[in-house]
Amino acid sequence: MESKILALSLILAGIASAQTVGEVKELAEATEGKLTSLEENYLETKTTVAGLAKLKISGLAQVQGQYYLDTGLVSSSRTQQQTYFRVRRGRLKATYDAGNGSSFVTQYNINETGLSAQDIYFKWNEPWLKTFSVQAGLQDIPFGYEIGYSSSTMEWLERSRFVSNAMFAGEKDVGFVLGATPKVSGLDVVEAKVALMSGWGLATNQADPKALIGRLAAGKNFLDAGVGVKIGASYYMESFVNQVAPVAAKAATKYKNATLASTPLDSVAAVKEVTSDYYVVDGSTNFKKTGFREELDANLIGADFQMTADLSMIPGLAGAKFSGEMYTGTAVGLAGSNKRPAAITDALYQRDLLAWYAAYVQNIGKSVQTVVRYDVYDPNTSVSGDEVGAWKPDPKDAKKKVSTNGTSKTDLQYSTLYLGLNVFLNGSTKLSIGYDLVSNETSNSLKSTEAISDFSKDAEDDFVTVRGQFSF
Image (cartoon, rainbow, N blue to C red; front, side, top):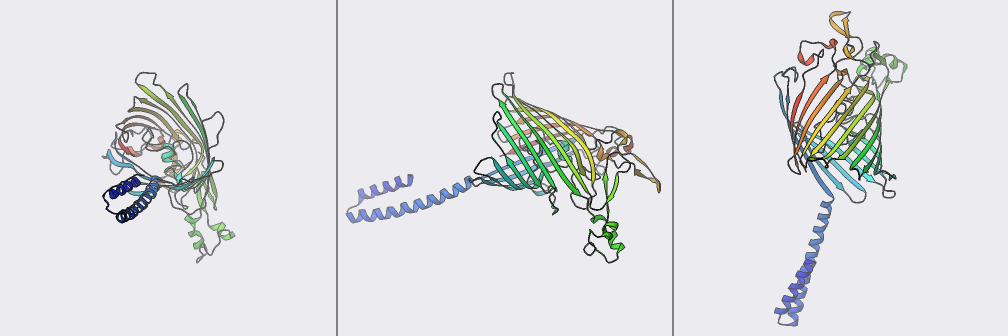
């Protein structure tokens, strides 16, 4: 419109100064050419702007310092190092919404150690019922509440010990997620997700996808009371194949020139000679198993709730949030870690676990937030106390120890009381201070002269974290 008004003004000015009809006609043709050029430039700019409007760039930087209260527990090799500075998260995210029900998301984490992918997926929303969607690629594991909760808005500094140190460490996996958001009378939100994922998380592996995950959540806002409630339930099932690769040399030795390629894995000879060990750590003495391509299943269930309440009727207070989660079932991990196996050659350890947390968040005014959370994680409910790490002298060498039930410090229960304070400096910047009071289960079987390895008493491994966050 502005270009047309400008062109009309030029024409009128030219007519006013023109001496003949020919001059007026010549001036009009020249002005028309300029108008056409302006319109072409405008349309080109409009197309570019429209394309950029579909692209959203967001980011996050979390820089922190941590101070450990005991110098002997930080590291056995650097026992005097108590303070750490690091970039906890440096995220850069791009979301392209095509406007036709399809979108694409890519996100990377950048810190002092390098660059790693966090999200690479596309999402398609069906246009007919406007209820179902398909999301495919590297994305959050749809289990529980914490995993999918944004790191930029999370009130506490880190996710629960179960999520951070067990099967969902990394929070991401590759696969397909079918989602549904049906409208249900009496509820404000209903969300359902069913996922088929690789089961290897951020590790690169071409093994058959084995993880089946489901989640159902529903929420209701009671506006008159200023209260909102949301509950959810999750299920995770995965089969890990105990591979023969670690002991494939047995076949080569037995059959001299034989290899796994020339000796079929389903042959009688291979079945007899090519086996590998796996471990069912349930407190029994026959924890060590031997089999041929045995499958170990991980089955986990979870329940979560979140409740928000408007407490502005109390002077100085604002909104409050109560939340909690519980997880239980059977997990598959490693000898020294409860995280998922990262390679098909890893020896598998199966354990029963129980984990839960409860949290209370209180907003004070518009810029201050206090947090209290209690987090419990028992990676092996089959053993406790001195049973953890139980051993006997090696009959072949009295100087060595032999485990009587396959347990170690990996099987100790931990509980953590977190006290946090968040100060919102402006719409983009937040300062957080957190104090983690960590308690571990004790076992006289794990007594040691080194503080970092002595679990016959509660380790003095509390720490303080100060973190600055900028997000956009």
